[in-house]
Amino acid sequence: MQNGEYKKQIYNLGGKYITIKQGYSSGINIFDIEPYYDGHKEYLNILDKVSEIRALLSTISRKYLNRTLTPKEIADIEIVVNELYKKRGITKDVDSLYENKNGKLQNGKYILGKIKKNMPTLTEFQISLSKMKNSKELSEILISFLNGKALGMFDCQSTINSNEDIIGFDLSEIKDEFTKFYATFVILTWIWQKFILLNKDSEKVVAIDETWMFLKYPESANFLETLARRGRKYNTSLIVASQFLDEFLLNDEGKAIIKSCSTTMLMKQSSGNLSEITDFFSLAKGTEDFLMSARPGECILNLNGNVTAIKFDITNFEKEFVTT
Image (cartoon, rainbow, N blue to C red):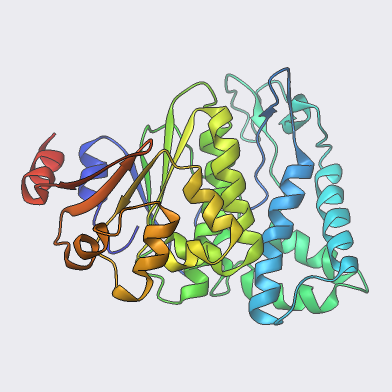
């Protein structure tokens, strides 16, 4: 979310609003993991976490090293991630995620329920990776992402819970495009673990603004497409919003994300890409004039193949939404 435009609405609906700032701990740990349900049983999907970390590091490598990960770096990432969980006794077994302290805390007090172990952190990962002779360059790049550094927002233990029905993340104080992308990527991995997996039987909606950023990197585009596809198994709907539709039409992952959407809303478009848009969405040529001249609140709505032009009364809608 940008500029806090949804803050009031989220608070009015009893939700939680979280602002992410550079140089400050976010309370979100990249390495946090929750039980995965495959339709038959629950287990800890550490291989899935390896894939998340690898995809994230691949985009970092493209940005700062101007290259993809080498096969040896990919192998080292998997080795290190597995070793970090193994050191904590964390395996596929869901019970291995918790301490065996019978609910007793260090201060001598007791709590009901299980005590979750501290998860690995990015600092631990970077230190271990730096000892791998084939991954020293990658490990040096990660120093900027450690606690106390400008990009160290996620080098910490998770302290944010997901008990609220609505959670909003505000990235408006982050101005750099890649840093904003990095924060969004990590937040999405947290949402997958803490919001989607932990509430598998509840209907959920994940809304992502500025989605075009994910499509600039093949690994993150694939991650988003996977999230859209796998989310259905967990009663999760994905809403993607972007001012740059071109980015979606330039790669297969972007097209797959759009095709997986049962509903699309097309607002005013520039003249340069109208033909491509109308072809992709199988729209009549007459819609091009509408999309070029559409005013605020006007759009082309495609609902399960039924296409129509509509207009929202934005002023009244916002008033009703805020006061609900």
